[in-house]
Image (cartoon, rainbow over all chains, first blue to last red; front, side, top):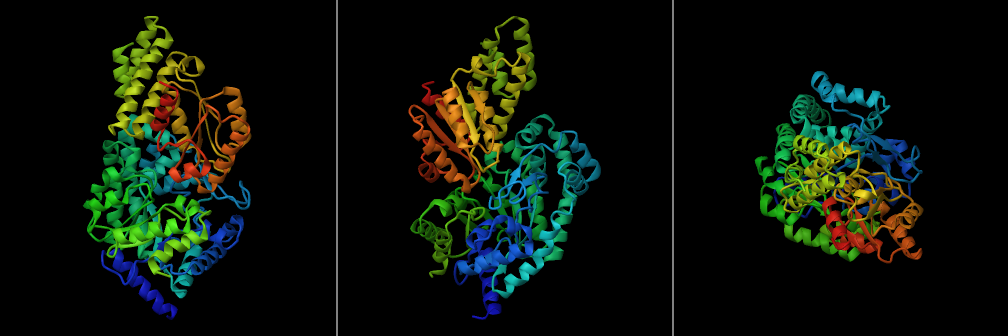
Length: 368
Length: 208
């Protein structure tokens, strides 16, 4: 099949599933970056030195795996959540060995009095000032990654692979939690809740504005609405209802209003509050847990309301066997397909995933 | 024991906890008795966590209140003297610098009657070995967030065994991607999904 035709078939396959329809076969949409470098024998320091090179390596890896309908990232994501979490990063070839995985180095860079600054300055200016003044950045760290993305998307399309997710956004909770550190931020929720809420409210106009700008510029099929530290397992319902859900809903609905199907990238366990997702419009978003939320309990609540994506656990891809991964994936397809389901890993394919395991996951959908 | 203090601690009522501690101190109640009440309150917090009335947010807040109260009595709740259940050693394995989970577990263990030795992050095997020899803990915890660190945990546990230090020692692991299969792979005794499970497992093992 020529690549353009293949691309069209795959777009149709993914979008049919995303909108709760029954595609010709279960689509496979992966998230992987460091894994691709390992897969292609490239050191991580070289992989992130030049984002265009990193993107080339990722595409080579996806093509070698075969049967990948779409991807959720096209360039190495080493710096992607740097600003979202107001955190320093340790990078391979800089603070780490050449082939060690980049990691968040969480330090308290934001203090309780800074909430007033958010309220006064607005979210974007506040974050930019923190990055420059306290994280030693220039505010332009994301530029190489952002400028590599359009060409990476075009190359993927020409190769017949759908660049499904074209951006990442999240709510103020994630940003403040990263800047304050998790324990200190949770204490803020008890000690100065009104102030935190005021800062969150003051942040949303910038976050929504950026979300709309991102859609207008990149015209993605989907975007990530990230929930990393906002899972139900971390917070009492009272706190979650106040500091997570209103903002999460607002952001998700903003993307839906722009004609995008948000992928709710949800790490950790969201089981307790899954019924809140029913407040989002049916068939307009993707539920993508990381392996920690029980997909079957989620199905009891969200079946027929949201497309499911996932959730082959990263640890299984690293430690499991080909048969184990294949059987797990087949069971997902059987239990969650044939309509409204996309096969994928939970969270991200880890760098030490076995290539044969990733291929086994894909084979469960393609039959090859 | 002070019922007021126990209840205020269990209800996360920081102002009342601090007032009550000050009042008990003024009445010359021994520091260890005050700590016992605080720890009793923490046990109720743990129970509420298990019953899903409380979550991580409440565990963290309870530890913060405990620590603030401890400062009022000169930090008497820290260290071996106040530890009812012995020493717990913990760190994040080498090549992994994530400390959120590790910090939560050490804080919660510290406020639940354990003498905690926090080895930090990116901890080499030798440091675990030295700590086991020095502090003779009955339970240690190894944390990681990266699947790439699984082999490091495995190596660490194998070395602990080779050194003859595994007898009577329980090795717990925890972290985002860690599951039962990981536990078997690295040769640990138990995988803890949260801080409270670490408390309960350790207490049970120590016969509390």
